[in-house]
Length: 475
Image (cartoon, rainbow, N blue to C red; front, side):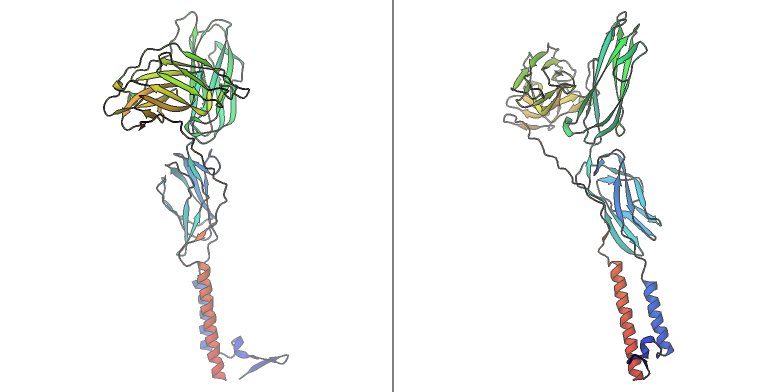
């Protein structure tokens, strides 16, 4: 047996393959080559991210398209989004990739949910890996509701008129970069208040608890004619809202403002509403912050509706100052059992107030029930109504003033109880803590690093066996 000597140590020559015959050398080289050919390139860890223009942090707006991006890809392969019932898209959920990122831009969330995520599967050389996005909430987009006071002005030469606008966000997402523009006719000029104003944000809140913002202008008339003032409210992430104020010249016949009527789908089959009555007013005792010092109860003159403002309630006017008084009056709206106007416009309350409406059980047809609705300036919106059949009352919680009416609907539309209605307990909201993008998680398939390690072990074992055989033969 041949040995190499170095500093007194003997090293077997087979270690350097010098003593192997040609067949063994070829087999060894083929095994090493197989190691590099058989092991595929390992894909870099991928990550899934979510983005949507105008959305709040860690949220997605329901009904509006957002983008899903898978990044950190290497090599070539396929990437697919795991389908879930709460979202849809106008493109295939599986895409081929040869670059580092792949995106889907038409994903739409169709449900309001909390703590959701999107998972993608990345497949390279037949081996899948999974990656999951941050957790996010699906919430309602901004919903801007406005009211303007007055709805019409009667002008003559050189008279000044104040126009007030209240803006409230009924959605859950913050309304951003809200541009307010007043466009008076040529016979009116703005002497106080900017014609174009920008509100950076208006906070949202479910159930009418969103932030309310007021704006006002003073306009000077010059040779007025019958015309219209137009006010537009344009958020960057919500629909445009338009208000108008009728301008009536004193030399012309006044333009009447129509009373809002329900849409055909809201029409009730019984009751016609009564005639209007003089408003009943009540003074509030508040501190400098608008906190009510003593409970105030105010009812319409006909006793059909009662508003309760408990002690400790925050009562603010349209400018954010303490509210001094409130009014309530019966009015007439076709197709309703009863209707009421609450004022002043723009007043808001925290927590919500209880509005109770009395009705005649004879007005409720078989198979029908009563529901309270609020007029938002364009349509009637159903409110969560508690009906007490024993006392024939319907109660709702309201956070601001508007026109309210009692409608008939097919039962069951609301919850009926036989005990006195109680004030609804506020439902707590959950704040989702910020999270970071999660890296890819290996799927149940055997990960690539283990495949590599296994093949290395096999090759080393084969080399040891070959070396041992050679050594025995030469020994």
